[in-house]
Image (tube, rainbow, N blue to C red; front, side, top):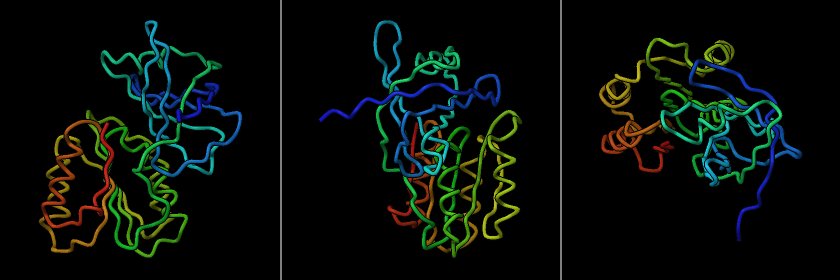
Length: 226
């Protein structure tokens, strides 16, 4: 059975930089989804209907207005179409989809690794985990490039100040692999941690494979690759 097609109205656009924007989609009725999931937007481009998945950067508690965090991809027809839309435009989509999810704080230390806009699905995961009074440490390592201000930086730092069990660090995408290896492979022999990794391209499976080969359980290393 085909997934039902839903519609939303583009209510607001926030620029994070020349090539990164948040699109806020107002729904006619709340959409039930789990932290980490995505929707598939159906975009009319060049006489065709492109299907483009975008993770929800907002939380399920804000289910009537979804936030999508989008980079304009060079030569990418989907992102270029979205960047041309004016407030009030209608967007068609299906979903929610995806198994990269977190419903509650893991029963072990959890490390969230986001590369660039990979913070999108991890943001609602963090809010859900922290809302459940976690009994183990939660850590975020967010990587970026070019010295730009990390996405949602003030919000994340505010969470770190108010939640003693949550820490956040920033690094450059070019050294992300070495930083993860140094912190959680070479520094100690503890292999009980859980990892949630999201980003664009080969860095995601590379991190996944390194952690699993280092002795972390396969199911303890979850990931989403764009």
